[in-house]
Amino acid sequence: MKRIIALIVAIVFVLGAVSLTFASPAMDKCNKCHKADKALDKAVAAKKIDSADALIKAVKASPKAKLHEKFTDDDYKAVAKELKLK
Image (tube, rainbow, N blue to C red; front, side, top):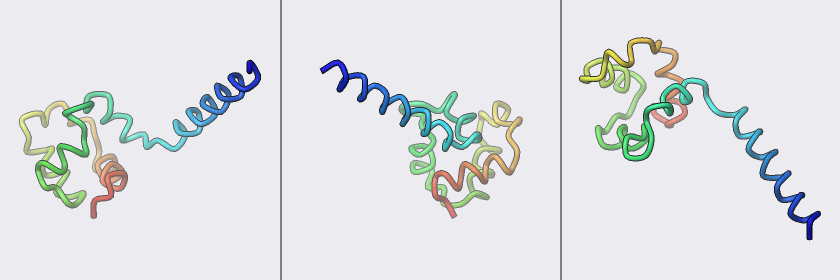
């Protein structure tokens, strides 16, 4: 029984470590603040954003634009790719 539990814990640990390597650095920046009801996918769906350019335009025109000024266009394009936008 102890071996089974140790095996399960090891598998969960390995899968967690592997999933961290596949995370986008741009999404990590976004996910620091965009959690739960403020999640990026929900915001994109609510504002009907369908492309990377629309995402950039929406963020730069938003009241919170000052908080996002450190992000580059490449960051936005990486996030758009993660969100499967055009």
